[in-house]
Each structure stands twice: as C-alpha cells, then as structure tokens.
Image (tube, rainbow over all chains, first blue to last red; front, side, top):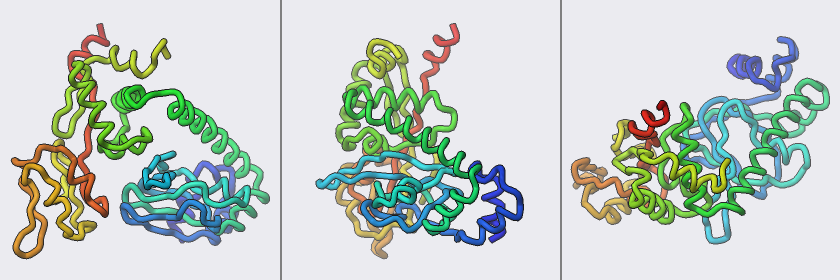
Length: 222
Length: 79
C-alpha cells in the first residue's frame, strides 16, 4: 500500500493532488506483477481494469488471423494501459504482454472513471497523455501504409542508434515493430550489409553509412 | 545461463521447458540436451543466427543486438 502511494505521488497524473487525496486514491488500487512473456489481458475482452506501469516493459500488440503479431506500442513506466476502453466502454483494443518482468498498479475501471470525474487536474493530465498517443498512432499508420520494410528498418536503425536510452533489440522484436516477420528483417539486414551500409556482428549492428540509411528512411528528406 | 554480454544469446532457464525444439533447430549444434535433460550451450559453435529464438515456444531465448553508429561515421559527423 505504501509503495502504491509513493508511486502515485510521483506519477504525472496525480502531481497536483495532496497527500490525503493520494491516500484515498491508493486505497482503490492493487499491485500486480507479471513475469516476462505473461499476458496481462486479451484483445476483445471487456475492460474491467486500468493499469499504471510501475516497472518493467509491457507491449500492446494486435494479432492477425494467421497469428502474426504487430506491436502497436511498447509501454514503459509511468504509462497507463487501457484508459481508452475504460472511457469509451468498448472492448480492449489490443492484447498486452510483459516484455520483461513488470509491476503494475491496477484500478478497477469504475474507480478510475470516478477519479477522473472528481479530480479535473487528473483528467487534464490524462487528456494530455491521450493527445500524445494520438500523435504516435498517426505516425505508426503513416509508417505502415506508406513505407516499405527496408524504409521502416532503416528508420528504426537510425532511431535506435541515435537514442541514448535504446535497449538491445532482437530481430524478432524488430520484425514485430515493423509489422513483418523475422526472415524479412534478416533479408533486409543482409541487403544493407551487402551494400556496405551496415556491419552485422554477433550482438551488434554497426551503421557504416548514415547518409545511405537516411536516404532510404526519409526519401526526399525529413 | 542468462548473459547480458555482447554477442551471447540470452537463455532464460526459468522460462525454458526443456522441450528441445531449439536443439533440433540449431544449424551449428551449439545447443544440446544433457543426459539429465538440461539444456547445454556451446558459445564457440553459435553463429548467432536466431533460429533457436524463432522456434522457442515460450520466448526463453533472445539474441539481442546493440545498434551503434560506426566509428568512422561518428568522426565524419563531427567534421
């Protein structure tokens, strides 16, 4: 309970609330721990719970009828999970699975809706968060509909290489983020290597020609 | 057997069910099953091809990559 309270005190959604209000909100929450690979909830289920990620990483993914996965989002603390279905009453829009061991703070849906209606400052923070998410999804739609796999892969490699906090990534993870399968990623990496743009070693992909990758990732300029 | 070091497959033995699918899939014989039914790994044989990662039904094997900008490119950017 104390841990949940401390977490909520530091969470951006609740930054304008006082100690008494945080304590009251914490009473409605429970902690939940997931092992790596464990499913949190399945796409299509009714929304009964809203989660705030306390530690670890959770992936939101959509599954095709053939069983192919598309990661639509990788969630990190302090992000919220299943806010949209809690608000619109619809089914869960995506399956969520722990990418690492993860700890979450769980609120019953009705409790979260009640918190939002009682505390306008929390509602404003949630709105801000939802607006940011909308921008991200717009960018994902653009990537999936307008870019080829090599273009998307070049963009991913550049973003990862230039991001100081990017964690190590497997080819399988690259594939799900790009909306394709690992064999296609491996083939595209081999093509890039044959062109002399990258060098793939055990555990490291070294970018040798930034300009070439930028030209592929952002045809016509950024 | 989990190792975060560069170029070493990360095998989570807590998740591994010892089904042996990775042993069958490994083209270079880097994975084997001991007489006691434990998974064994020979780093010197591993080609880091990720076939084992593909077939593992519980996601216990990961072959992650760091993505880095080459030394020459970094120097070039500074010029």
